[in-house]
Amino acid sequence: MAESADATGVISRDRAWTVLAEFTKSDSLRKHARARRTIP
Image (cartoon, rainbow, N blue to C red; front, side, top):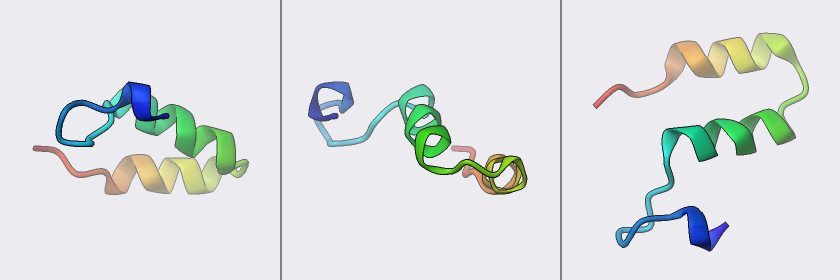
């Protein structure tokens, strides 16, 4: 996973979603996560 991080240790939104989807099997929890995401 370290190879996906930038110099500050922040991973991309796409990588974060991939990790979240891998460990969160419930569609309702994924929808909740998408609704709660922080938009810079």
